[in-house]
Amino acid sequence: MRLTSKIAIGAVVVAVIGTGAAAVLGGGFPMPGDTHPPCAQLPTAAEANAALARNQALAHDIEALGAGISVGVGSPCPKGQDRALIQVTYESKSERDAIGGLLTRRDGFGVAVHLVER
Image (cartoon, rainbow, N blue to C red; front, top):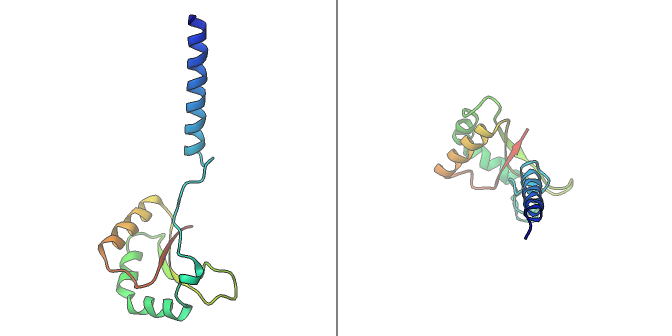
């Protein structure tokens, strides 16, 4: 094989790898993020509110992890469905990591928790 052919093949390989890496890192391909269970599996809004009321200490501990963190009851489902979950909003990756770390060490709320970046 001639040297020019090897260089051409090498250039194509580098271009393909670079394009793929840029697409993944730049968001060209959707990567899995935080999701919640299907709406039919979520508790009612009353149940989610009761779970938050029973676990106020955990909610306060989560909010204390960062200034951009808030905990409340959210409804990710279409209007008219009485389904809800605990929604934790955050502003930065470090806050998200801190929330995840705390939730893995604690018992949780007893209902689904959905993390949402502001």
